[in-house]
Image (tube, rainbow, N blue to C red; front, side, top):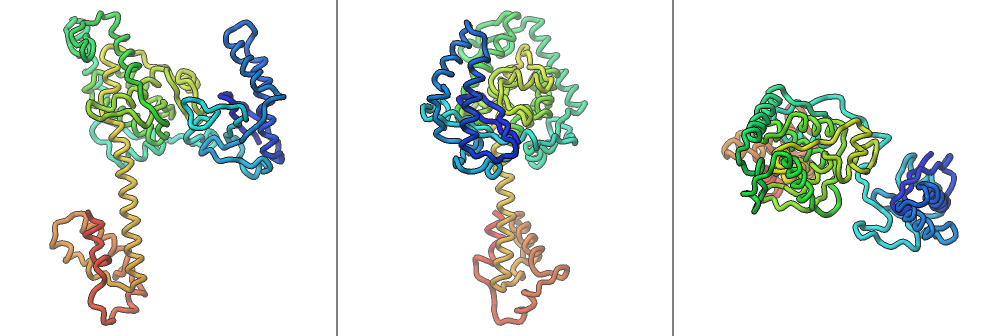
Length: 422
């Protein structure tokens, strides 16, 4: 088996044979490989070599003492005496913390980086496609896209709208019209006309300046949802994005190449500018990016490994990539999906409780429910009837107390449709 071990920001592949060595051996072996790698990785005389040589001296084989070995995902502490095969999987990820390490200023734990959903050996790319037209994406499909269950393609109508919209932007530029965000600066620079040769640079600077979020990165699921929503809104053909730029987003989504998007930073007033800027930054080949086959790395190298080319921004395209509320929508959709699952579970719990208490389903009669025009109440009552006694699925428990002298069940049971249906 083989384990990927991180020592002070460097990843090392450590062969572990059949896993019969203990965790203490793994820590020592990783530090030894780290020390040897730094001493021979860069020719002497370069700035980088001096930096790495200095780091190697600080982690010399004589002074390096392993303080802890932890799983990179979740940070679980591994006991030194445990056998590798008992606590780690093949191609697992761990981090070694040395006694003379100190906490990194931007990381929670010394020498460790949060790596969500590390599944390089288990990820299976979807084979089915969902066609986006900018108008028909629903929450269920969005959740499926977030889970990596579908790839994306554009409808021909959406492509035509995108081409028409882009043609309008190019006419504005060619005719040298003064239009905010296309040929002018932003905010207090709205009256500053930008020369044609600097229009792309203006859009690039817009992305870089707004990529100012903080916190841990979104999970792959949430980032996929964010990217899918952005593709969907651009498919409406109202933003002025070019078709090659939009196809770059689609290709990245289909390859599951996901930029680093911090959890915090949006204000939601004029759009999710900060998180969408981080999303766009990765598509420009800047910042960090993750894919199942590479893990975290520099965006340009992750894209290169998947034969993807970064977007080269033209007029208006930076603004088109970040002006929207897809971050809030993605998080809200995921919350809605989880809430719906919880509600269904509540209905099952209520049905089981009613069975145990030998209650009746007569309070959920469809004719009774029809008297009040509450859609949720009717839906929950229908679910409860389906779970409880019926002519199709008779319940022995219900039959056992059909002729009891109980008039009605407790309020908390017979009014579940009204409460859950809200």
